[in-house]
Amino acid sequence: MFKIPKGKEVPLGCVTPAPVGEQPMMITGNWREFRPLLEPEKCDLCMNCIVFCPDACFQLDDAEEKVVLNEKYCKGCNICINECAPGALTAAYELDFDDGVVRLDKPF
Amino acid sequence: MAKEMMLSGCASSAQAAKMAKVEVISSYPIRPYTAIMMELSKMVANGELDAEFVHGEGEHGQLSIVLGAAAAGARALTGSSGVGVTYAFENYSPIAGGRIPLQMMIADRALDPPGDFGSEHTDAMSCRDQGWLMGWAETPQEAFDNCLINYRVGEDHRVLLPQFVCQDGYFVSHIPGPVSLPEQSQVDEFLPPYNLPHPLDPKRPVSHGPQIRPDQGTIMDIQRAQAMLDAPAVIREAIDDYNRIFGRKYAPFVEEYMTDDAEIAFFLMGAHTMTARHAVRHLRAKGVKIGLVKLRFVRPWPTEEVAQALSKFKAVGVVETSTSYGGAMRGGNLLHEVRASLYELPQRPLTTSFMAGLGGEMVSLEDFYHMTEVLSKAVREGKTKKTVYWVGFEAED
Image (tube, helix red, strand yellow):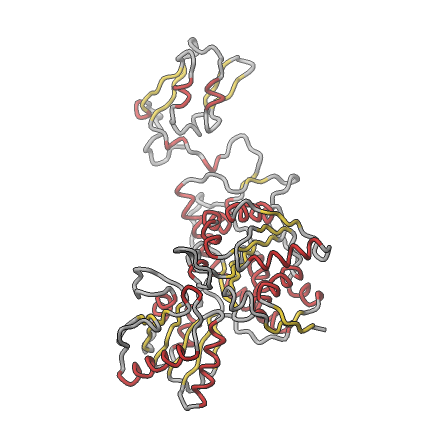
């Protein structure tokens, strides 16, 4: 009756394997208009970004002693920029990047 | 041996749930459905039924509780009436979309304004397009049977949809009627154990209800649409088995009464069908060529069966027990779908609708006789004057 194009399949009831660190079927980074940019030399590892990010996009890299942004799931809410104590995060317009994800047909 | 008892619709529904061996029940009080939960809580307290009985903090919580339970692999039951049904509305689409086949028993109650408590189908009918199976019972016996039939169809892996199992408040829910209670072995033969293909299980971890993208939403909609397309064949199988095992004579979708050579017919569902049967019988004795067609499933809507059943009449009166304010027919919900079902026929009967049984009013024999006069006049004149008659409240017929 219906024909689902190849690559567009969704599992029954959208039940997906768990636990997974990333959910490749549910990438939401292309909703973003602004990208948070981190200046590492200003970062004092206060970790406010890790605590406040609603999508858990910031993680602490213990070995390197730095915070890392997972851009695939950042929706560009800018909460991290507002909460960053040392002012190490700034908002950059997504289309200023060659690999800018917003409004592209195939972002990933 | 089957045991014959006089039971109300609520009591018979509780008996059916017990024989279906429901494992988790969530409850919140609102009349008239609440008598189902009164019966079930007694069974659990007395040790007759081994089930978790959980109190919700409201109907939204009730539906969330059974969603979790059924997602974890337990056969789950809940229910409500009137504004309780609409308070839980947010949960209906995710339960159907997540393909969790739990059951909700609804004993109809008019929606407010303000504070009516009589039976009217608008509460459940407002939820009919969320991807749940839905149908009405005419008697306590049918309420019992529909519980088992709906669990069987909904849990079938070709369907996997939740079910609204509806009965008119008071007319069915609170008036005792004869109910044949089968042997447990018959129920076990008909209804296999609940087996969700994608349960929440620590040994095989899965995510239910994740965030999805807009382009995945269409495909989720298609999954539900396909399940509704696949459901009729499963319903037919289940009804055949039910009739064989329990000795009933149900038609899967539409039941006809005295329709041989009938020129006019009532089309309706639920409790008022019983009064309509008597009206038809009395009118037949007077020589009026009238019959009735009873609808057993609103979702999936049996388009072809309705068209086939109604095509042989000259005029059909659709008795509405729900409201669709501002809709195409200016009255209830059923005539929309009846006319859509008839549209492709080369020769269509005249159709009109009767707003009756609203707010819990009974539909009397006199009301049905009056509707018969309107239909007979339409046949004589070859046209219907109006698409909707508010029975007893029209300035002129």
